[in-house]
Amino acid sequence: MRETRSIDREWGLVGRVALVTGASRGIGQAIAIRLAAAGAAVAVHYGSDLAGARSTLAAIESAGGSGFLVGAELGVDGDVDTLVRGLDAGLNGGQLDILVNNAAVPPAGPIDVTTPEQFDHLFAVNVRAPYFLIRRLLSSLSDGGRIITISSVATRMANPSQTSFAMTKGAIETMSRTLANELGVRGITVNAVAPGATRTATNGSLFEAPGLAGFIAERTALNRLGEAEDVADIVGFLASDDARWITGQVLDASGGLYLGPRL
Ligand code: NAP
Image (tube, rainbow, N blue to C red):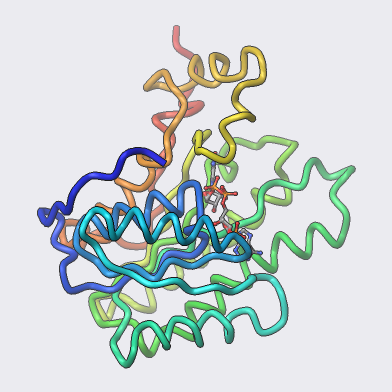
């Protein structure tokens, strides 16, 4: 986790309440810290990593922010009920302003190795859970609110090792676009953010494979791997009032990964 910045109210999320799923580590953790740094109270969701979620909350609080923990395994029966029960307890009658669907399971491999069970689990966590979470929270999400779902450049990169994973991200991009059209009358914006290769404290070792980081950097316009904070800042912008006129979009958060050949 990068050193936290002190409260920066210029992004104007003071008085807002956000839920970030999968905030116990990685990109979700950076998003939770980023939204809190802009003044939002943050519900820090985790699946199994209570210690990680506690460290996220501790980072928020040590920078002067506030939040609470919500534990719920996604992709199992009753997942949304459990999550909403924990959220409601923390909200204590208050409303939610920003929902960030970040929790997801990673790629299960190419088509010839992905099992039906892995396929179902990918869709249960990456698609069904955010879809029904949004449905359950629609009545408590404030007008003018934000729904931001984390996608992936896998939807445009046609990487055979990620076919089923990319399908789940394609589904949530479609969901975001269609829900944007439905919820715009309430001033709610609905967008997706698509990271590229993003190094986090958890997956850093993946990118230590010989030559991999350089290979990716060479194919990235901005010439490096992404960091969790690169993505979190984009989410912070989308959550802010400055992004009020952006809806139904997929924002690429990859530094320009695979834009084309550099001649
Ligand atoms: P990560 O380090 O693997 O963290 C995943 C988070 O999701 C954890 O907080 C985990 O919580 C939660 N989670 C996973 N499965 C869950 C389940 N069944 N129930 C409840 N919570 C669950 O992931 P990341 O690399 O930060 O990625 C975050 C988002 O960015 C994901 O949507 C991912 O697809 C997307 N993305 C990442 C990259 C990248 O290079 N990192 C690239 C493109 C897109 P617990 O550990 O507490 O269970």
